[in-house]
Length: 310
Length: 277
Image (cartoon, rainbow over the protein chains, first blue to last red):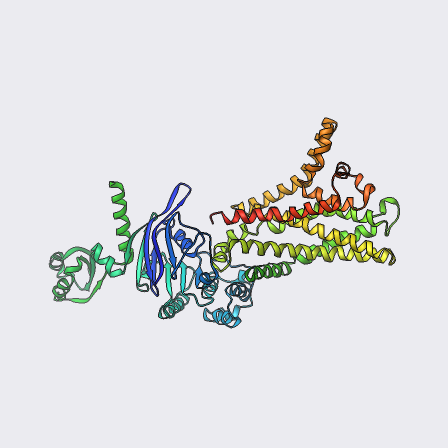
C-alpha cells in the first residue's frame, strides 16, 4: 500500500497554476525529503495531502483511502500528524493545555500527552504558558502535537527551524524511531545537507512541477554531476607537476599551497584516486559526492534554461 | 458531536481564563442592578418603580451593549486562528470546518449567556426583593424572556461577526468591519428610517411597509420583544414601538429574533466551507 499517492494532480488558484501535473507515489514507511523554494508549491501539496483543499483535477490517496473533496474523515485524520512551518500554538495556554486540546480531538489518553511532552523535553515547562517559550521550545511542542495518536503519516514543514544542535539531534532520533515503526514521513527543508543523509528519497518541486524524484544516488547518476576530490599536503616544491597530474582527471581548483580540489566525473573517480594517491608529500585525500545543494542548483538552472529555450 | 463539544469546552475555558466571562458578568450586573435600583430617579424617587419601566430601560441599554460585545467576542474567531497559523493545523485534525465553527460559536454564545444570566439574574433577584415578594411570577417570566431574547440577540451579532471573521484576511480589518456593523445597526439604521419618515411625512404605503423593514434590524426586533410585552404604554414612547404597534405581536417577534440568531451563523458556516484556506 502506498502511504501517499498523487495521480495527475493539478491545482489552480484563480489564475495561477500552483501545482502542475504532479505524479508522486510514496510507499508506506518511506521518508521523503521535499525540496523547493518558497512558492514552489510545497504548502499547496501539503494542504492537498492533509485534505484541507481539493485538487482542481487528478486524484489523491492517503493511507489507502481516496481523498474526497471537502472531507476530513475521522478515521483517516486521526492517523495523520502535521507540523506546520510557523507554529504559534495558543500563547495564552500552557504546554499541557495545548496538548490536552489537540489530544482530545484525536481521542488520545492523558498518559500519552504527558509522555510526548517529556519525550520532546518539555516536561519541566508543561505548566508554563506557551508565550513564554523560546522558539525552539515552540517547535518541540509542535512536534509533540504532531505525534499525538501515533500517526501513520507525518507531514512536516521545515521541522528543524529554530532548534539548537542538541534539540535537532534529538529530533533526528525521534524520526529514526518513527522510521523503524514504518511511519510514512514527508519532510520539507531548506537545509539540504540535513535531509540528504536522513531521507530515503527526495522530490524536487520547482514552480509547481515535480522536476526530480528518487533516491539521492539515482538522482546523482542521472544528472552526472562530478565528484569532488580534495587533496591536502605540502605542494610548494612540486606545485606545477601536481597540477598537471590532477588536470588529467578533471577541472583543478588550487585553493592554496596546501589544498587542491579536483572535480572528477563519477566514472573516473576510482582511477583518479588510485593515481593521485602516489603524489609525494600528500597528507590526506577526500572524496565527496555532489551535495543535494549542488544537485538542486544544477536541476534548477537546467530547468530555467530549458524554460527559456522553449 | 464529540469534536464540537471539545471545541466548545476549550472556548469556554478560554472565556474563564482571559476574564471575558467575569468582566461581562460584572458589567451586566452593574448596569442591570443600577437600573433596577435607580431606574425611577427621573421620576423623583429611588427604588423599585414598575417592572415595565425597569425592563424597558434595561432593554435599551442592552440593545447598545450586546451587539458591541458579541462583535468583539467573535470577530477574530477564524481570522485570528488563520493569522497565528493554527487554522490549518486545527483543520488537519479530525474536525470538519462546520464542526469547528459551530463549536466556537456555541462556546462564545455560552460565554455571553452565562454573563447575561448571572448579571440579569441578580437584577431579577433585586426586583423581587424590592417588590417585597409580591409579583414573583411576573418578574420571573419577564426576566426569563428578557434573558432568552438577549441571548438570541447576542447570537445574531456573533453570527455577523463570524461572517466577517471567515471572510477577512487580517484581524485588524475584521475588527474595523465589526465596528462598522455595530455602527450601522445600532446608530445608522434607525436614524435613516426616521429621516425617511419625516421627509415624506409618512404616507399610507410606508405605514404598511415600515414595520416589516424594522425586522431587518435585530436591534429593533430585540427592543420590540421586550417593549411590546408590556402593552401600548411602554412601547409607544419609541419610534420603533410606535410604528410596529399592531403589526406583529411580541411572540412572533421572538420567532424573528430566533431566525436572526441562526441565519448569520449558518451563512458563516456556508461561506467557510467553500472558501480556500
